[in-house]
View 1 (cartoon, rainbow, N blue to C red):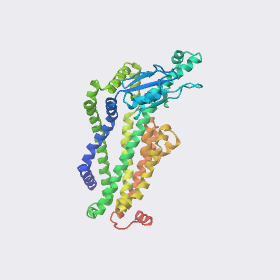
View 2 (cartoon, helix red, strand yellow):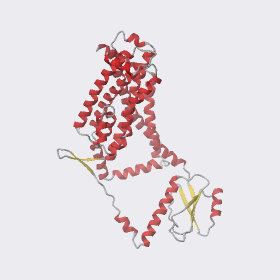
View 3 (cartoon, helix red, strand yellow):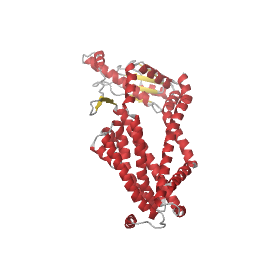
View 4 (cartoon, one colour):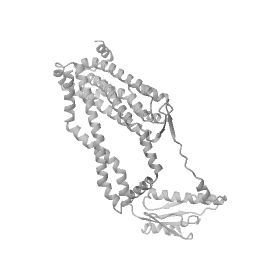
Length: 440
């Protein structure tokens, strides 16, 4: 055990002191925070950069006179139906108008077609605004033609809220929010997939590197192969947990600080119309006690402690399982190129669980979800998708038991391969030779 702790400490300290680890640890949160801030920042900048557009309207049907509402970025100028469309097009090239909206006369049908002429690309917001305005007016006229007051139709429109209540065996009821559980499940599944795959691959690369440099011949004379393999696996697992924890903490810290510095002034300035509108909307929402209560209920409906502990347990044992396999692969080959055929096969179960993720979040209690949760090579991802929706403790216990037992068995097999393959050079072992190593 003393040798194991020494190897573990060496693997951990060697990797956390590497320049690549330090750079990635601090660069990762900056990139993550930038991705979180970028949408709001781009909205603000696009609002600033978008110049006010003047649109000439030639409506031969006279249905939409004054129906297109002017906005902060769009102004509509109406022309008589006798105006010539070609002359209005020339005004666009002269720079007087940015676009011309032409609604041609129709003799048989209601006006549902329009043409928007411009010498530059039309913003999607403008075309969408025109389309929605025409749609509302046509529907309004249809209702009037049928003798129906549009106000009555609008008054009878009702939003229906269907609450999902989950009941347990003790007759306790709990409201569930599928959308929030959907997001949490997919996010955790993606995180655990990438973390396990990235750091498990580091075990394989470390073994190949030591084997290529013949360092292993010196190390193996002092420690047992099994201790060396387990020390490497546990050391890299601690590196992965350290880096992941730092990513979470630093990302949140950078996000809140950068939001205050970058987005804060925009909110207070007159040009920050997008953020100001968002704050006004949030203020209006906060005045509603029902909305606040709903937000609190959504947060309380998620068992974050169970999710966090499940993530740690499935990450640790999922990583240990795959790391043992990758360590065995690294001991069998001399370079990373030769390892690709083996690592692809090993990573396939994780890929399958990610491919099945949409099905699992749509129906987490399906037989597919149950079996993927029990197979140890897919359970780390599958279970992290299902747990936010609520999984019976019995299924979690069985899944973890199978995962741990498989990890022990795979580790025993990997140690058998590792102790022989680590000293072999210049030869690719056949499956027959690997079988012999297992019998030694």
